[in-house]
Length: 111
Image (cartoon, one colour):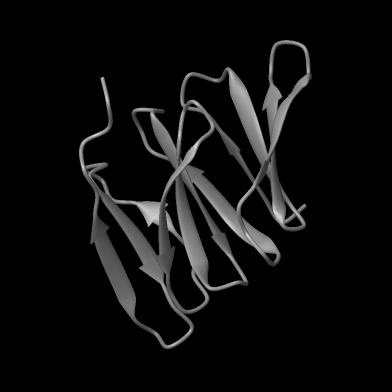
């Protein structure tokens, strides 16, 4: 396990495990769904503050933005990344292995 993230309301926990993300219900520990989308080790996962989206970064040089319905909606190719949401929760920030920071402006999440 390389990283973990709790949904802001505390109802779900996501583990970055190998090339998959494992989503658990925190009330009873049930595995809700294994998510596949990366082709190499997932190193990091982070939720947006509103809990409607989360993102994962992988050694396959991609960042996938997922909806709270556990669907991968956007995929970006970046050099090795360490993602996180901006304070405004409208941008996704990644830091690359080349000492660059990339800001990806995202569309508003569905209501």
